[in-house]
Structure formats: structure tokens, C-alpha cells
Image 1 (spheres, one colour):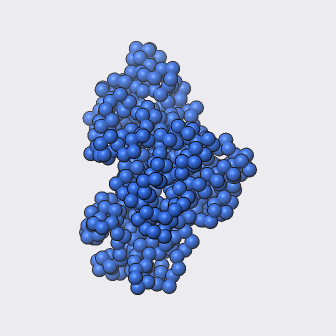
Image 2 (cartoon, helix red, strand yellow):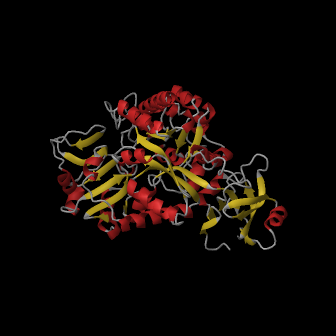
Image 3 (tube, one colour):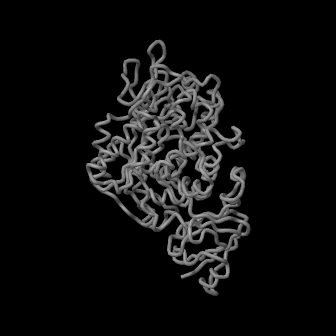
Length: 532
């Protein structure tokens, strides 16, 4: 078996006994040696292949602890509406959408955000109807918690002025009582149910595009937050055939009927693919005012968001999966949702004796100060996304007011309270660029350096804490801390080479940094064209 030695200007190991090295040797997917160049070369032997990464800095494999692989693939291959500054620009992009944007005869798009538009109001269906009178259009908001559809889509779904809001959803209607074309949270499912499923070819194209993109941005692994069954079955095939390039820790989709199949199957472990967790959603998102709050939204009196299933149903499902041996991961954005989720996880795990399953709060975005302490004291995983903060900071106070911001995007407070931080992006809601996540975690600023000093800077993480959040944290949250997260001989050879030093270099350098190489289980799944 071949041994490869990687040389770099520095190697940050996150190993307390030997934090800094200059080389590492890889054999049979494992780290053979980590340390000074001469020592590593001696351990590797004279026949070892040598890769000189020049001035690069090597860090343990970076892992996105909350993301959506199929969603990323769909966003890469259908109409892309991110940063569109107006409704007119959305329509223009749709008019030029590639053929891959169609699923059956439905035109799909993703990424619109009314907060980017003049006035910030939700759109209506008139502009879509004028351009697409007979083609059904389904456009998911940037947070995937609202959809904008046209009249033909409403017609095919049977939605009229007389259609009531489904539980956990809102069908927005105008002053005359007519559907506007915007559907929030569970109301999206009424239309989604009549969209044809993607073909196997479409699914393969999407998943390959997503995994390739992940490798390019330096991800060696992804925790997929609610995987649909067709995607999971395809990844199982690829894993069995040795074709899965990254490690995927999949959470079963716990909202729909597919949960019965996952529950019957039980936890599953392959080579690069694992499923031993389940994902539920307690509420919606802040941007679409679906996040469940204890008190009214400051910018919409009378609205407190949505719980996406009755609390007793959420707890019953959590208990069933805990009893089957699954780690339970629950999406909670608003403070009311986080209170509910903590109640459910703490009570159900105690009753089922499954505290050791490291249950997770996905997002843990807006919490009361009391709930921050409860989450930390219980030692739960807080799966948080740094770029959500920097995307939301320009309008979050308008939604929440100054008082509730004290417990919002509160990474430092959560960590200090005892929570296990696992950092991610929630791609494709955010970009999968993990270096942007490191930058946001450390600075709480946008790419232009705003605001000066960072937004609510008291909640920043240090550079080592941020790096641990994308390495050690996800490893612990997926029960792999004895195999990954650090660069120590005997552990899996998952690492990333970067053009900048994320620990001792200036945080600002992360904005323009490049991934030099991504290595998973000793295999180079990405190498920048001008290296080696």
C-alpha cells in the first residue's frame, strides 16, 4: 500500500499534546505520522510519495454540521434567485432558466428574499402569471420556509380563496381574500405534493454537483439535516460501490411519511455514509415570520409564528425514535420553539434513558436567557450557523426588538453555558463556503467588514473555538470524536489545506482565502489546479 507524505508551512492538529506540525503521512486512509518533516518522512519510509503544499496551512477535515445536500444540488441546477434585487429581476432570471430547472413541466427556482427588495414586502402572483400563464411555477424562499407560486400552481394544487390554512402553515391572502401566491411553512406542502418527483437522472446530477461543490470549498463531511429517502438510497448505492467522496452523516427526514421506513430500518452505518439520527422541525424561519415566538413580532403585531406540528405529536415522534436508538435533532428558531424543544428533549430523553445519544437543537437561534442555561446544563448539542447571523443582522432587530436580541445567535453564551457547539451553514440557504463560516464566527461581520467591531461582538468565538466548531464539534455531535476532528496518528486521514492560516492569520484574510486541497480518508477529492 502506498504511503503519502504531505508537507506544509504549518499543520494545526487541534491535539493539545502536539498542536503544531509541518508534515503528515497517510497510509490506508489513516494518519500514519504527524509532526516535524524529518520525523514524518522517516516514519513514512523512503518509497513514500511526497506532496509539497508550499505555504499552505493544513487543518483537520472541515465538516458542515447542518446542511442539505439534495437541496444544494437542486439550487445548483435550477433557476437561481439569490440576491435578486427585485421581482422584475426574478422574472427575468426565470425567463432564462436552464432546462434543468424543470421537474416535469414545473419550473423550479430557489433563493428569493423579499428583504432584498424595495419595501421588503412579500411578492404576489401577478408578475408570475403575466410571464407564465400556463406553466406552473414553484419558487422557494432563501430560507426554504416559504414558497412563491403562480396561479397555475395554485390551480393544480386546488388552492382557492376558500382553502383554509393547514396546521403549521399560512396561505397568504390579499384584501379580497384571494391567495397571493405566497405559502408559508406547511402550506408549501399543499403545492409540493402535486409536483412530479425528480427522475433518477436528475437526482444523480444534483447529488454529484452538490458533493463536488462541497469538496471544492474544503468540506470533508456534511451532516445532512433531513434526508429524503430517494437521496439516501442513492447514496447507499454509491457508498457500497466506493463512489461516495465525502462523509455524510444523514438525519432521517422525520416530518413526513418516510419516517416510518426510517424508524423500521433503524440506525444504519456504511463506510462513508451513516444514519443514526432523525430531524424534526418545531417551527419556521425568522425571515418569513414563521419562527415561533413567545411574544408578537415587533414588525407584525398579532403574529407569533408557527409551530409545524402539535407539541404532543413532536414529543411522541421524538420518543419513538429515541427508543429505536436514534439521536434526535430538532429545528428550533424562535424562542417559543426553543423552549418547547428543550422541554421535549429533556423530558423524553430522561424517560427513555437516552441522554447518551447526544440529542441536538438545530439552529438554537433565538432563546431566552434561561433556556440558554438549560441547554448548556443538559450538555445538548447546539448546532448553529454563523452566516445566518451575518445574513440576518440588518433586519433581525426589526423582527425581534432589542431585548430579545440578547439571546439571539448567542454562540458565546451557549458555549459558556456548557453546550457542545457544532457549526454549519444550512446550505443552500447560505452558501456552502465553510471559510465564510469561520470568518462570521470570529468577526460577526459581513464580507465588507460591517459593522465595525462586529454585530453584538460579545457573542464572537475565538479563532480556535471557531475551527473546533467545524472539526471537533461535528465529530462529537456524530459520535466520531475517537476517529476524526483532530490530526493524530491512527485517526482518519481527513484534512484540508488552506491558502491562509485560520488561527494566527488575520480573520479578514478568510474572505478571499482559497482551498488548496481537500483530503478524505487519504484520497484527494479536490486539488486546486495550480498545486502539485
